[in-house]
Length: 183
Image (cartoon, rainbow, N blue to C red; front, side, top):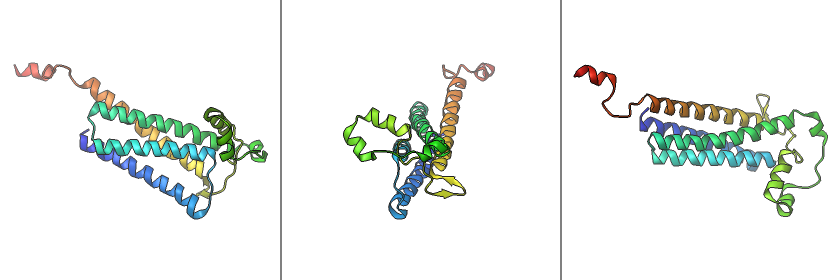
């Protein structure tokens, strides 16, 4: 795959991520849906993935650089997938839907360490189990999970493709079998 094709693929992922981020900000500021802690973590993962793809699209890396960019994007996709999966599980658990949390997210950030806050968020002590908006009967975390899984599949495919191309490439220039046939 040429550098131009790699560049356009990174740019396409950047545009898709920017659109999803735009939709999340539209839902927050125009519709009035306030994001929970897990939604904010997903948004951070998406912003990092989008930023990595923008940098890669501008940089136009070679095979090694593209592999590193896809690996970084893959890590962001894994983190977003785990976060979205946890929120989907919380939304589908009837026991968590009945629980009422005692503290708000900004108050917890002010009084606890980051590790404690993330652990508290993943325990589902906030309004994460509520299904406040749906499209085609899928909630926002379910759409987010679909997007992150798609980016995960794309990242794994691109990394495997780059590794396969590196394995098939001869190391010594013209030492391929077809070079011996010309002699």
